[in-house]
Image 1 (cartoon, rainbow, N blue to C red):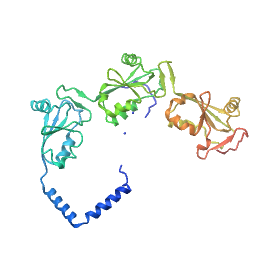
Image 2: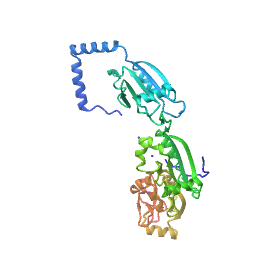
Image 3: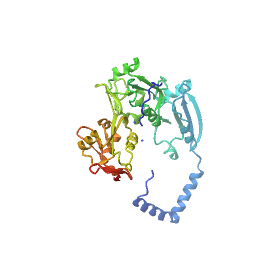
Image 4: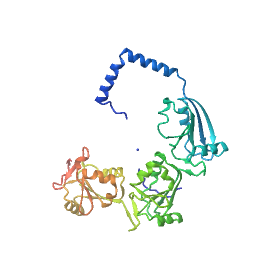
Length: 379
C-alpha cells in the first residue's frame, strides 16, 4: 500500500589463475600421461566406464498443491535424472501415499526428493555430496531454500511480511522501500509489503511495542529466520525480538529522532562565490555532487564573498579561494559522505563541513579571496 508521501529513496553476497605449483603438477601429470602403459590403462578404464549402464534410480518428488510459493524440486530432479537411468514420480504430500513416505523417512520439510535404487554408485557421489541425508536405502534432499512446508502440520515457512512505519509529518524523511527490493534480490519471499503511518492504529502499536529510536523503521515477520544470510546481515542493522520479529533499527537520513522529536539529516548549504569572477566554476555543482552521495538538501543560500556576511564567513573559516560550499552538521548522518569528505574538506569545531580541496574539481577556475581576482585562476 502507498502512504501518499513523496520520499527520497535509498539504495541489507572466479576462477583464479593457476598457481606456479599447480602448473608444475600439471606438467608432471602430462609427462606420465605420455607413457604407453598408463595411457592404455586409462583408455581401457574409460571404455569400460563408457559402456557401463547408468545407475538405476527411482526419484519421488514430494510436493503440495497447497503451496504455490514453495521451492520447486523439478530442476534438481531433472539434473539427477540426466545422470542416471531413472523413473520420476510426483506424489502429493497430503495423499495417503505421501503421508506414508513422510512417516517412513521422517520428512520435516517439503517439497523434497526421495531417491532410492543404486544411490551408492560412485558416479553419483558428487550429486549427493551436499544437501542430502541418508536413511536406510534412500537419499532425502534437505537443502531446500525457503519457501517450504512441514508435511505433517502443513505450516509454511519463509513467507515474510514487511512493514515500514513512517512519520506522516516528515515528507522529506527517507523511504526504505528500496530495501524491500534488495531483500527480494537476496531470495527473500515477501508475501506482503505494507507502509503505515506511525499515528495509525497499526503503526502506533508497532512503535509502542518495539520502541524505535528513529522513524521510519521496518518490521519483518519471524519467517525471516528461515534465511541464513538475512539472519547474519541483520546483526549489523537491527534486532530480533522475543516474538521473533526482525526490527530494522539503523537510522537512514533524513529521519525523525523519536527521543528528541527532531528531524535529522536535512542539510543546509551556503554557497560562497565571487560574483565578479565570470570565469569561475558554477558553485551549484556541489548540489548535484552531494545528491549523488545521498544527501537531502533542504535549504541553499548563495552569498557573494564581497558581501558583509560573505566576508565574515571567509574570515571565520579562513577561506583562501572561492567558489566553495559550507555544509551543515546534519551531513554527518550520511555514511557515504563521511567516507569521502576527509579527501576534499574539513569538519569545523561548530560541526560545519567546509569544501577546501578545490583542485578535486577537474578544470575548475576559482578566485583568490585575498586578491579579489575577477578573472579567475586555476584551482
